[in-house]
Length: 96
Image (cartoon, rainbow, N blue to C red; front, top):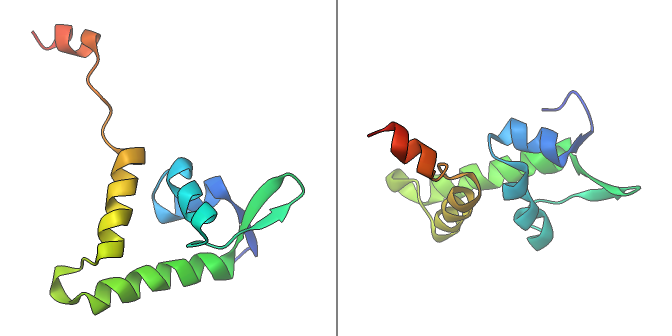
């Protein structure tokens, strides 16, 4: 992650393995720091690393279960944004 100093939200999401829209609530809340560069938003490599380390330490502090209240909220938010696609009518017709 540290070969560049600033990443777009999309690039950051790819590195974290989540969607771009899943990151925006974290940017808005300040959970993940970002800077404005003109009209676009960028995330510093150091802030991305710090965010990952915070998630790791929260998991470590939770013990063997690996879950904290914050991680539960994160998982819920990610599922809302990255959950499985809903089955469409055409999918249901094909499965008959």
